[in-house]
Length: 439
Image 1 (cartoon, one colour):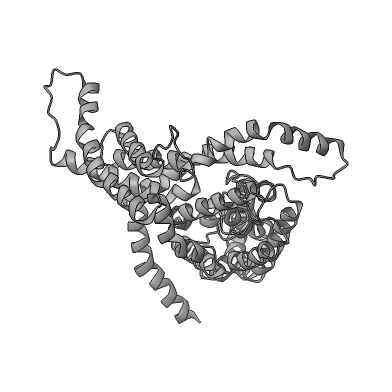
Image 2 (tube, helix red, strand yellow):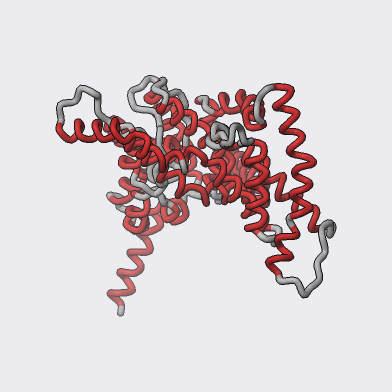
């Protein structure tokens, strides 16, 4: 078993970690990740308004507060939904500008001008004017993959032209802002000569917009990403990286954000249409069910540490309890340490995998509601789970069950690690006591 563990750790350290480290610092991956993060405030507020527009009460409820809420939504549904329509409903717009801005900054270019170019390019292919209006059907979840591709393409095009000094040269006496605006003339022309003809070709040949065509290509991948095997693979990869000391949640989460937001957009669209909700693998499902208390689902481990006979583990628990309640568990992961600790390796991997299977089955069988809203990832687990599932009280119960199960998974390994630490602490404590007596 020891040789097997050493071989596994060697693979993680020598093969997986270097690749993950390079991937986590790759400029396009970083720009996409930071772009999604920048867009989150709009999406969280928009999701909250969607919940407000769909009260968690049945139409025949006799409770006075429920009747008031239902009646208000019935009378003012369009006004209540407006904040949602202008945030979540057009989230691809914010994502496009944010990704382009962050990528341009990494190239030391003008981020604002790059964001404007990307936004124009995206609207050109995703919302062509029709009958004096811009259609918004492709500006939400359907347009996320197009937003990523268009923002990267337009910014790379701008970078290529600037790198090779292709553009309109103005005298140095011209004010900087005017020179910056003229720097976009050639990139805009290049977009109209490359991206726009492609969009027209797809519209003419397939009778669909570019985002719809891209979604058709990605549909098998999106479907596969919402399967239990895909969830388990993502959980396993994330925690293998964490075990090697690399922030696995940042890498895996950055890759999955596009799929998470697409699935969320699908759920919200069918919710508004009164149809059955289908998508499961969305960020709150990961955050509040799979990794309760942080990566590794360490909330249960914190509770065990609080009652430990080891002074080291008790001190770590006191330091990490409050942050863990808000899903921040770096004090536990690096203070225990969990990183490269062979004793805690198995439960650190197993607990979130077991949570994923249980939560997946509970959601698929409608024991708890599907995720329909975004909650800030620092929201305490039970509250975040209820918030994201439309205030479903059963989600709170499920979180409690998952914490209890993860505690049981950690328990035997915690006791092994506790014994190891006590063997180290007791001689040191005896020596300190002896020194105190002698002095």
